[in-house]
Length: 205
Ligand SMILES: CC(C)(COP(=O)(O)OP(=O)(O)OC[C@H]1O[C@@H](n2cnc3c(N)ncnc32)[C@H](O)[C@@H]1OP(=O)(O)O)[C@@H](O)C(=O)NCCC(=O)NCCS
Figure (tube, rainbow, N blue to C red):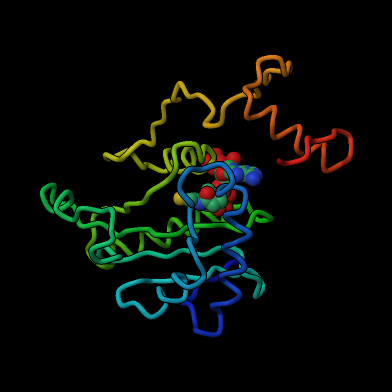
């Protein structure tokens, strides 16, 4: 039996630990962190208005987590342009986080979670679920596609290799012979040898 409930303050540490486990494998393969970015940010989300944080439990064990927002979150810092949706008569539920514990993958937990998000959107009169996923998070990407998600318009991370040279020069052979030394260098070397007692200097007049 799987149950869904809203988060309490006392759940915060437990959910943070859950998120680290659930995103560990994914975060190792993607340019952008697939969240969570930091514990501090995660704690702040709890205090923010208009964000739903849902816990899915089986026999009291946390097996999945979903976070969604009714408005674009992040203020001036956000990557989302709300007018994109307004112009298209879309009223989205923004799905900020979605994760199933790795031990529970493939057992229908994600399916139930997705149904819950559809239900939330519907009862709030919203028209779409909108989320961001890394293109190389292939497991999640094909999972979303199979559930009716289609690409909107999003940045693709591109890279091109620079034809670069090392900043530091390679090793260089120094001239070995002393024949070409100038008089000054010769004199200094002579004086040094005299201190060691190997060369006699002329007495000063
Ligand atoms: C994507 C994710 C939410 C799917 O959750 P889930 O509980 O495994 O999904 P379900 O059990 O409801 O769906 C099972 C489907 O996933 C496939 N699947 C994915 N991972 C699987 C696994 N490890 N074992 C078995 N089946 C798996 C099944 O083949 C099945 O395919 P279907 O599309 O034919 O039904 C989950 O893999 C996950 O949390 N991934 C890590 C976090 C992540 O990437 N989140 C999205 C970031 S935007």
